[in-house]
Length: 472
Image 1 (cartoon, helix red, strand yellow):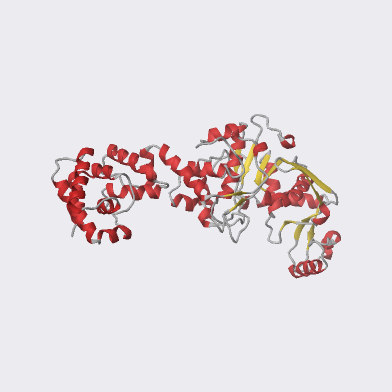
Image 2 (cartoon, rainbow, N blue to C red; image 1 turned 120 degrees about the vertical axis):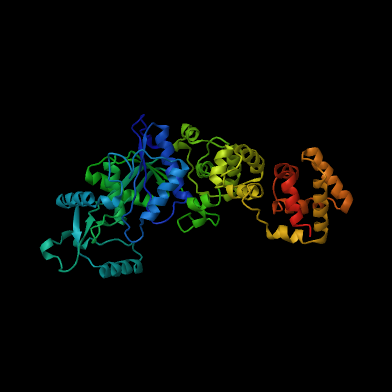
């Protein structure tokens, strides 16, 4: 394994720390999944932490949605807002902890209060950019004493960055090094007393005993700052694994603005959790082929096998896995997930119908549409089906089909064949012009299960009733 990672059984503690500023999307779920799998692979624990210090954008609704989506996926944490001994697990409830550690750094001369105004900092940045210099704080307040501070300005606390090369080993990218001189003294506590991201996560990761951090490689630039903070606070740093970002179809990094890739959106479109997980697992990792459960994924998961190249979220891959998921799922579960009313329904009959229609369904929404003609909730007719049924040839086919069914005692495969043969002889139609009007009249759609099964499921009386509706 790269970077000499310590994975002693039971010692591993990973974390997933979403910011509740938007819906959980495929990229963030990939991070959650890999942390979950790594913890499970080594008998460790996964911690769920809510990073909600962005007061303006964070919301309880997004936190609730994230928790519901993780539970729907089956990614259950061992410690989090609802349980655990290392809490609180919301950063907004840990502000006093951050302030205490920041004050300790100030007392030890490793941090200091800064009274520079926003206007001065913006001017400094403009000047540095105009000179081709990297924007960084010029350390002006390093030596200003409190008694010399300007009045009416709420100070921030800045970390005093030592000038040296920061080195750390990354499980995916290998050894990395950064010159701290390009960083500059950075803010760890804002003028509003809110801890900065880099400071809060270091304190949290240390106090929650996080041993391994698996996250997107957009965080690589944060790691030197965090490594310096771990050292200054006297904490042992965790092992890092920075994974390349997940890209959307347009090759831009997948983010919260891509609402169609949110878990909430995918759930609404009728994708099953196991399909989402199997698709996400293959974004930068190649487990065994086929539809895998979480335990099967965990048994083979290794940081050594993670790709260093970005991966693209492919909706067609998700649809393929969803077909496999639907084909292998218990019919009763599919009925429940589809939200199909079962009150007063024959469950065995529904199981049979689901077993037939799911072969033609890529999503639960497809399945619900295909089940619609048979559930007794009222048949919906598509515009395409209506257009076909308005054609004179279609009306003739439907009349002939109704007459053929009325001559039957019951419908089985042999009886179906006799009806179709009779319609063909009566109308002279064949192929699509023969079969499509009958399908549209019986199901309200141009697609669906084999027509013989449509007749068999509906039965004689219901078939006659529906055909009568469209023969004139």
